[in-house]
Length: 219
Image (cartoon, rainbow, N blue to C red):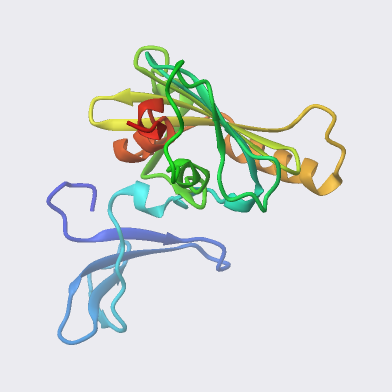
C-alpha cells in the first residue's frame, strides 16, 4: 500500500480494544469493494462501498474559519505593494461599509462590492495545512488583512503567494479591553487551533481577501 502504484489503502482503526489494520482495495461488483485484514492474505468482498482518500490532506477538516458576516465591524487591508485601506460600518444593520484610504479625488463605488469582503470568512476553507515554519511567508508576502467584529474578536490573516499556491497564517485574539467570557473563550480556542500552522488556500481566495483598492473605487 506504500507504493505509488498500489490500489489498496491501509486504514488503522484505533480504540476498539485491539487495533485493526484494514486494507481497502478496489471496487467489487455492485455497491461493494474488496478488503482484507493487514497481515492476512485472504480478501473479502464487503458492502457498502467505502471511499478512502490516499492523500492525507483530504482527511483534514477544511473549514478554517466560520465568522458570520453580520459580526464584522471593520476590515483593514494592506496588500503587498499596494495601497492600504479600511472598510468600516457603525452597526450590524448598516449593509454597506465605508471605504477609508482612497486616493484624493476618487470615490467609493456605488453599489459597493465591499460587502463581499465581509463574507470571506463565512466560511474560509483551506486545501492543505503545514507547520508554519515550512512556508516562507517573508520571501513572497501577499499582504495582511485584519477583521474585527462588533463583539471584540480580531482575526489577522497574513498571506503569501508561493508558486501556484496561496498560503495564510492566522492569529485570533480579543481586542484590548474585551471582557466578555464567551468571546474570550472563542478567541482562545481559535488561537490554540491555528497557532503554529500555515493553511493553503486557492490563489483566487487569497486575491479576494487582499483585494486591491482599485476594485472598490468608482471609475
